[in-house]
Length: 365
Image 1 (cartoon, helix red, strand yellow):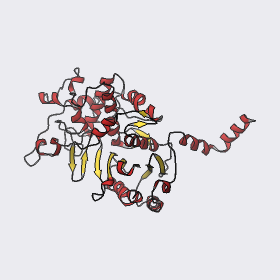
Image 2: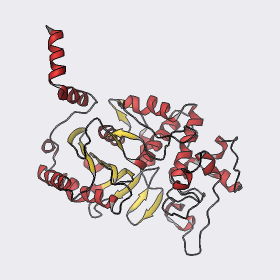
Image 3: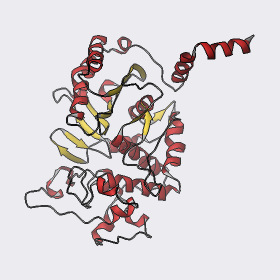
Image 4: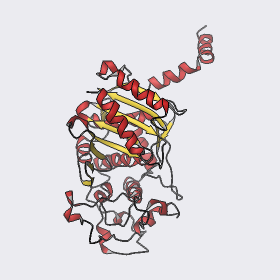
């Protein structure tokens, strides 16, 4: 009789199976009101997304006080779908770097990069200054390499990297950048670093991690980060030489992206287990480089106070093309995931910021 009933439930109620699977991933779900969120604000946000006022939003999730309090999907996606959050992957690489340092696989952020690749000496642009580039330089996007994804003329622009087979060699061969007379030099900038957005550098950092740990990135991440968090569905992108692209393109479920933010809000623990040390979280989410007015950069984490008049709206966050954001607001005990496939469009990040500043943050006050 029990066997018959189980079969009946599987055939008759397939949607309930998906629901049960979704609820078994470590999240406890409750309603926004019980977590002190204004449901009216969130309902207004939903209506604007559904009307197309906010374009190509695929999910919004909110965790507060450690519980999942809001979860909505659009654009044909659902709880089990993997979201391509593009460069949000870079922050995952930062987490993995911290874990490798905790495990003594890396000596620290002052270790130099080129020593990990003695078999790949620069073929082009040899320069002894490149030998001094450190892991911290890659974590803060402030190395001496001429690499700027925000400048189409840059020798190190990521679009040029994708045209060749060996992405690591591409990075090692980059020239040392110069500073025009009208540009500020590192010594004249806050924190003594000149920020330059460089995906190739973060890919190279992934290669360092693989060398240091003796494992592929995907295996190291599965064993030390995703596995302990109960994250089972992961999709990496790879270079032509089958190296995981640690600079972008990692696909995860929205709930699992939320876990990464909650892990940091929890001080590096999940279900009582320490996955990454709190000292690494403190170090990687404090400013090490200045980007522009109001935005700073940690170790592959963005830092911003969304309402300059309210310090409670200060966040560190993962960010990717399309307006994707995984934002942690420590003072509000809140993590927000906004995923979007609004790629390569003007105003994509401003749209996400508006969802935060006009709806989610006011709902939490």
